[in-house]
Length: 203
Image (cartoon, rainbow, N blue to C red; front, side, top):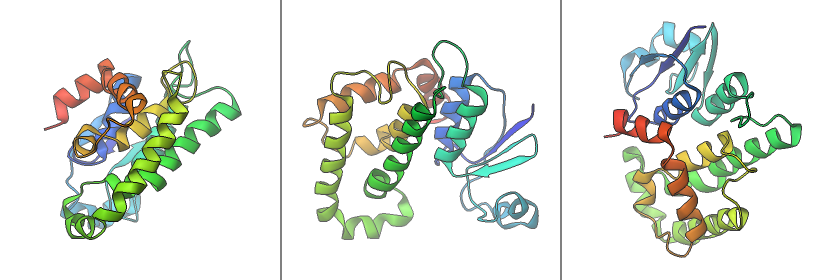
């Protein structure tokens, strides 16, 4: 098995590096920045027509989009054992997909801190607050009385949503009205794989 990840850890590639650490996989890491000219080369565009990171190649199969990559890796390498990262049941799998799509569609557009979007973020700042608050309330209700989003164990669903609510983003949010979310994030980022990944790559 040869797994290659293209993408700088100062991007959404960090999410994939966290998943790789959770799974204990070996990876060839090519830390390309988002504006690296190689991303627009014919060779890379043949792998990912969008010319973007992160992108993985797993034994010839290429895939982009960080949350989709994590779902794929969890399904391929983390579906077994007593605490699988990818649920065995169709309903469980649907749940991790549901939360991943929810995080990307309902939460990420409002909390991302991308430098290129600084002007847009400033323009929508007033509208963003209530939307973020409503989404965090949704997450808090889902977590009420439980440790993890989709069951008794940590899964790729938790990782993907927590990755969208990264420390670099949540430091700009008021989590005090959402204690369930704050405690859950502490559990997610307290995992050994999260700690080691951030210590190694997060600046």
